[in-house]
Amino acid sequence: AKVAVLISGTGTNMAALLYAAKAADCPYEIILVASNAPDAPGLKLASAEGIPTWGLSHKGMKRDVFDALVDEQLRAAGTEFVALAGYMRILSDDFVARWQGRMLNIHPSLLPLYKGLDTHQRAIDAGDAFGGCSVHIVTPGVDDGPVLAQTPVAIAPGDTAESLAKRVQFAEHQLYPPTLAAFVMRERSPDYLLGRVRDLAM
Ligand code: GRF
Image (spheres, rainbow, N blue to C red):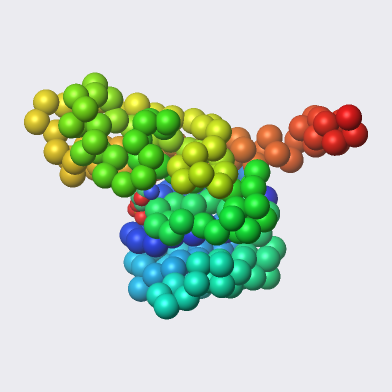
C-alpha cells in the first residue's frame, strides 16, 4: 500500500514508519513525505533515503488553498493512505473528507484525554498515573476519530513535560508502524472489502 506521510518538524515518527517499511513483510511503503515547513529536518532524512519529498510554507495562504496543493501532491504520487506524523496544521474539511477512512494520526496522549497541545503537562497537572500515545483514524474533529491503538506510559515522580515526552516518543515509534501496517492490511483484505460492498448494498 502506498503511504504518504505529512510532517511539520523533526519527523522521528516518519523515520520510524520509513525504517519499518524496509522489512520484507511490511505491507506498506512510503512514497512521499510532505511538509508545510520546507526546512523540516524530516524532509532531509526522507530524501537521503531516496523518498520523494515536497515542502511548501503555508504562510499567507488560505487553509483550503494550501490543503488543495497538498492533495494534488498526494494524488500525483499515487497515495492510497495518509499518515499524519507531527503535522501541526488543522486540516480543512474538504481534505479530511477526501481522505476519510484512509488517514491516520498519532497523538501524544491516551485519547480521548488531552486533545490538542501541551498533552504531557496537562497529564502531569491532573495527577494522572499514565500518559501515553494513540493512533486514530482522522475525522473532522481535531484529534477525534476512532482510536486504533494506544500505549500507556507511566508518569514517574518528578517527571516534567520534557522527560515524559521523551519516553512517550519511544512508545510512539513502537506503536505507529505496526498500527499502520495492520490498518492497511485490514482495509485491503477481501473480507473487509466484501463487507463494505454489502454495507453499501443494504
Ligand atoms: C509527536 O509527539 C506526535 O505525537 C505529535 O507531534 C510529535 C511529532 O514528533 N503530534 P516527530 O516530528 O515525529 O519527531
